Image (tube, rainbow, N blue to C red; front, side, top):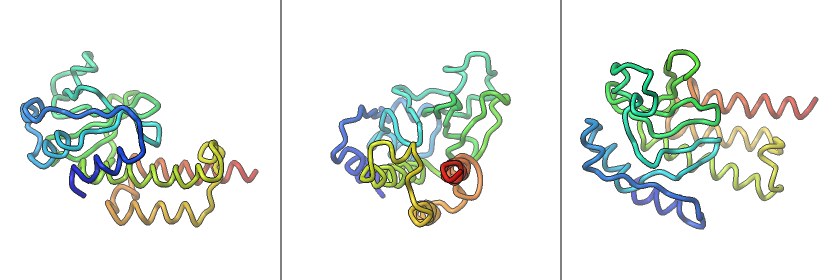
Length: 186
């Protein structure tokens, strides 16, 4: 998926606030050219499922968390999850997208291989939510999805970035879907 295609897919029928970033601002962080291209052409939505919010201005982690030392400058903050854990691009790890635990000294977990894979996951997860909305506005929160729908979601994600469904952020999200489904049964 190209950056332009992502932006068109995301904005199709969606009135959410959307952030784009200037290439010259991104280049100073030493991001890979394909990451700069993706963020400057496609940008990011202000928010996305599952409970993610994105930054209007992308900066190194210490800019947003002044108490961390400069060794965290290789983490470029793009957003965070609903628990306040940052989602970052790690420039020292091939621009991999990572999830940092702010309650555990910003220890990292894998999120996605690249920003391109990350945004494709956002689209797939949004499609899953839209499917559930056909069952009612609270279908996602009420875990009104079948195991088959869950397996289709997981297979779609795995097809894009298999490592992401096996560890880290997305594995945690997928595990929570199963846990919530099991809790609804009881």
